[in-house]
Length: 116
Image (cartoon, rainbow, N blue to C red; front, side, top):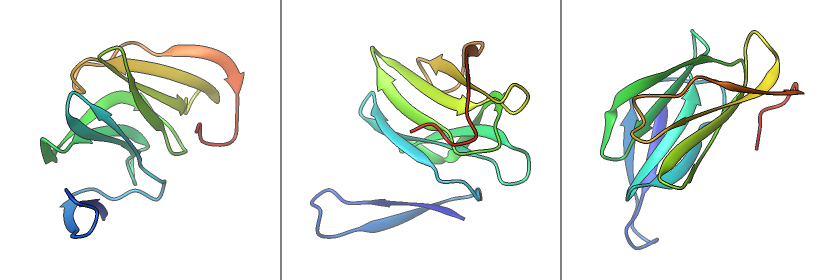
């Protein structure tokens, strides 16, 4: 099960379980004063996203990957880079709210490793 650790002082820590599992490393970023994590579903290869505003609400990004995705925030958008399951290329999607995701942009670059 995925678990998010948190602290407001760096000394005392809490743990919030997310009702999902993944055998790939999750990625985390800050967007609109919330922590966001992107990860690959354990049994479906779906790209999944959730935020600290409601860790229990997991959204599907509508794309698939065999390796861990990478998430970041830039210009009021969440961006996820991942290796497309069908193309084997680095693909990129974006969203302003973590629920509605753009069509993927295929970079044409292939990789057998997760994007950083």
